[in-house]
Length: 97
Image 1 (cartoon, rainbow, N blue to C red):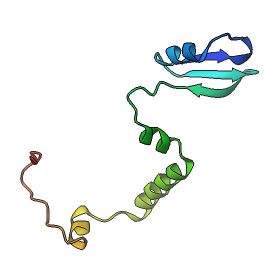
Image 2 (image 1 turned 135 degrees about the vertical axis):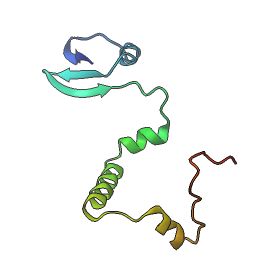
Image 3 (image 1 turned 60 degrees about the horizontal axis):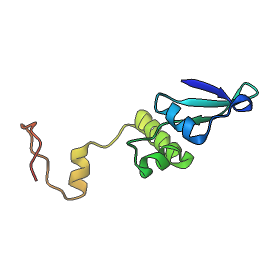
């Protein structure tokens, strides 16, 4: 991880992007973190937007907390309730489509 003080740099956005290919770049102001620049190559827009959406993150955290505290519903029960056929057992090979 590289740290760059915004007061003392002449780096361009392109320079920062190149640095971020090697690892996160933290821009600081007066020694305090201001912003992080991270390489997102190989990511899609949906993943990036959801990973940075506070409402989505809160929803996931609430779901995980509920699962830890109350447990969950077995997949076979969900399949029954939705009227789906039970999954075949005995084979671990993926099905072809």
